[in-house]
Length: 414
Image 1 (tube, rainbow, N blue to C red):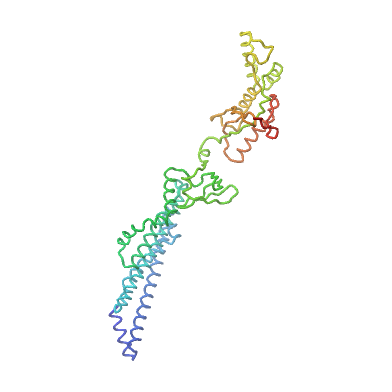
Image 2: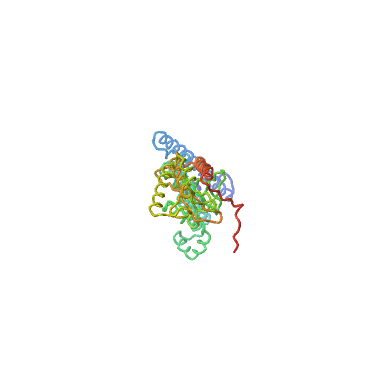
């Protein structure tokens, strides 16, 4: 560069141009010429690399190279050679001005760091997009991992730029950060917590993309559509989007319905409250009437004969119904509902089927249905429950029972 400058400067001086303007014009012309060469080289290399990548992508079976083209990886790689040319020759233009030469070196290095960060980001975006096309990684928090790597890339780039501007070596600058580590941790607290949470969520397989979760604290009830370093996005069933801090997944309690989705059925666990005043022992006329119910006819006859035999064998005084053994209306009702559910076409018979009596409450005696529907889809699941309880409510009166109503409950005197 010095050789070209001297020749150009001498030419201008022979043309009666003052030494000040000759120096200014020489530097300007060389700078403009060098920039044009750099731009031309950048254009040629960019076109060449892009064409090469496109041909390879068209012939290859994998779609990773196509994704790299979409994310401008070839264009970012093409900046490498023009950057080397700029760093090699531009500072040489200012051979007679050391401060300006040092400034140009630092400026070009900063530009190079920025271009490197952009290039790395395009590669990471390509990897992220490619991983999302793989079936076994679709439900993994790939975004979180890429964001963590990108965070370190940006931090390294920023630290390198500051080190270049300050004139301190990169490693000395990193060592000096130890003295302000407390401030760094404070500033990046949420990022660090999100990073730790992302790792724990992934390792413990707590949440996957596509999982249905319920998080009452944040009003979320829907499918996980995105897991990032700092947030988890949930699309609720009304199509609203709820954003949850990633750290909340390990610090708070939430419900993940994946186990239900992967199981053979969806649990039905609902009770009907019976007024305890309506529970009673059955007399022979009532037993005879209930024996005509086909689902439990054989059971009622068999149990009734067994009880009669027991009472006769033990000479039980049946002038009072309470004496000896008896059939109760609540017991036959439980047996009836259990038989009905076991024969229901929408209930999975391979899983538990039970009708049980819960602890009495102020609202009556709960009779709970515990079973699993074969169809796990929400709409069909609710239809199955409604169908079972429609029948259950309609059958209560046939067993001389009464459904408890909160409106008729009276507070007890203390």
